[in-house]
Image (tube, rainbow, N blue to C red):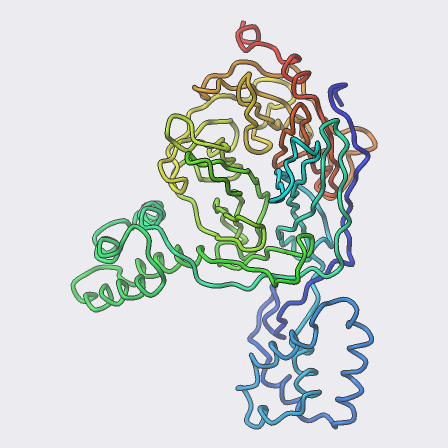
Length: 496
C-alpha cells in the first residue's frame, strides 16, 4: 500500500441477514431439468384443513414477520399469480391465500456470497451547500453476490468532510426490489445492436424506418406486426423479430416503494440479457452542457453466457431508467463515462479488447465507436490485462484516472493515469508503481488477491476511493489529490 493512501478503517462485510423475497415456483429452479410443479403444489394447499392453514400462517408470521416489510402483501401478490391454475382457488380464505403465497415465495440473501466492487459519487441535498458546510454527502453502490453467483446492485450512504473524515451510514433492515415498468427505446441502439447480429438489413429497416428516434413498446409492436404481415416475401422474419424483442427487453424503468430508504433499495436482474447478474456498476455524476446534472452508471449485464454493457440513469436513486449500450467500444466489460462532454462529444474509458485501456466516443451516449488505445500492459503488475477503476475525475492538471492491472497469480493492483483535459487521448503522466495492492492480511476471500474499485470522487483535495478486497469485502481509502498528482511520473520519462 502506497504511503499516499489513508485507510479510513471502514470495512464493509457481507451481511447474510440481508434478504429479499422472490417468487419461487417448484420445478422452475435456476438450475436443473423439469417443468413447473405449480399446479400439484396448489392442490396440496387447497386440500389442507383450515385449522392447519391458520396455524401455518401464524408460524410464518412468527418466523418471517420481522424480516420483511409488508410480507402479507407479498404473499397475496404471489398467490394471485397462480390461483387461475385450479378451479375453486379463487374462493380461498385469506389465511389460505397467505399460505399459498408463502409456498410460492423464498428468501434470497443478496450478500450471501460476497460484497464487492463499489462505486461512490457525490449526492448533495437540495438545501445545504457542501462547500459551505464542509460536508459532502455521497452514495456508494455495491455489488452483492448471492446463491448461484447472481449479482445485484445495492446502495449505501455516507459523508466526507473537507479534511477527509469519511462516515458510512448503517444499512437499514428491509432490502426491497423495485417495481418494473416499460421504458422508451432508441432507434440508433436498435440499428447498432441488430448490426452486431448481422441483422440490420431490409427486415429491420421495414420496422425501424417507420419509427421515431425514440419510441415505445406499442409503436415497436405495430412495426413488428407490419413485418409479420409481409413475411411471405422475406427471409428469416422470425429471427429478426426475436432480435428486435430481445433488444427491447433490455430497456425498462425500475421504481422503488416510497418507504424504501436508499440502503434498502436493490436493483435485481430483470431483462433476459442480465438474467444472471448486474455487475460492476460504475456511477458518475454527469454535468450536461446546460449545467444540469444527472447520475449515470454503466454496468455489465450477464445472462449466464454472454455479457453486454447497459446504462442506468437516475435523478434521485429512487427511480432508474435502464437501457442497452451498443457499438464496438461497448463490447466486453469496463465502460466508464467521463463526467461531462469534451469537444461536444461524450467520452468513455473502454477495455473492449479485454486487455488495454482506450478512449471511446459517442454522439448520443448509447452507441460507442471503436476506442483509441491509451495504455497497454507493459509492467510486471499488469502483464495480463489493464482496466479502469471508474470514471475519470476532473482536476486542473488533467483527467485523473484510476486503473487496475492484473499480473502474475492473477493479482490485481490499482494504478493512476493523468490525461490531458482537452485531448484525453494524450497521457500526461502515470504512476510508476501501484498505489494499492493486496496486503497479506487483505488478500483472502471469494476471489483471492484482488483489489478493485468501480469509481471514487474528489471533494476539494480529498479523493474518496472505495474498493473491493478479494471480491469479498469493501474498504474505503482517502488520498490527497494534490499529493497524488505530484507523485506521478511524466509519461515522456517512462517512455524513454
